[in-house]
Amino acid sequence: MTNDDLKYEISNFKKTFKSTFIISLLIQLLILIFFFMVGYLDRESDDSIFEHFNSLIGFSSLLSALLISIYISVRSVKYIISNYMGDNKVFLYLYPNGRTGIFQTKLCAFLLVSILAQLVGSFLVNILFLIFSRITNVLPPDVNYIGFIAVTFAVVLLSLFVITTSIVIGVRLSSKVATVISSIILVAILCNPLSFLCAYSAYTSLLCAVILVFVSLILVQYCKHYLKNDEVLR
Image 1 (cartoon, rainbow, N blue to C red):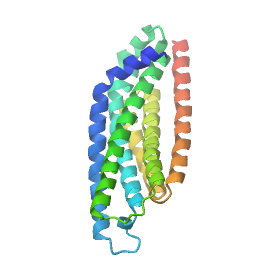
Image 2: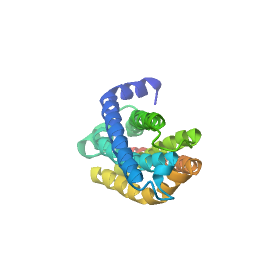
Image 3: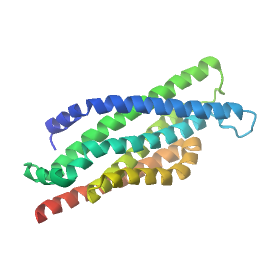
Image 4: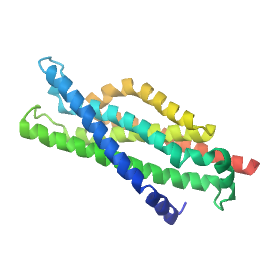
């Protein structure tokens, strides 16, 4: 994979950046408003999420990131998975770099564009909400800014894990359906155990997210190895 190849693939995903950014912004905004309203109605409770800005951001960011990861996984079916199915799978054998090189380049470009769009969209909403809460004084001033940034990056990395894993599964099984279903299953598995971490322990959630990203890198290497061996067998 060369820089020119990567730049070319990134340029092909410009529309993907715009659509993913808009979807990320809208989902994060709607979920944040939902949790804000729930917290506002339950504000008299001692453990109300409304009393903790970072908890509110943590819950909403995690849920929105996981939902966005499903959306991005669905988008990957068109840009990546479809290349490894049917006649398209056969055509890739004709490329000089083989299927492995194309997979690596397309995957890196797709993930860079999608994750950047998600990060910008979600972070923008969180920043605007922070400014709103400071101006209106609707939330207590006990904001952990480092934790706020940590949880924002943590949920994006979690999303990266879900997307990468679902793509690897889709390529390995040559199945569009497997890509979407695996992303939904991963979201269902991760949602409950990580919701508490993102709300109350931003640094631990960031550590878990980094570990999961390393796991996804291992899966990518496995997928490359599978594609390379498949080329040799052909």
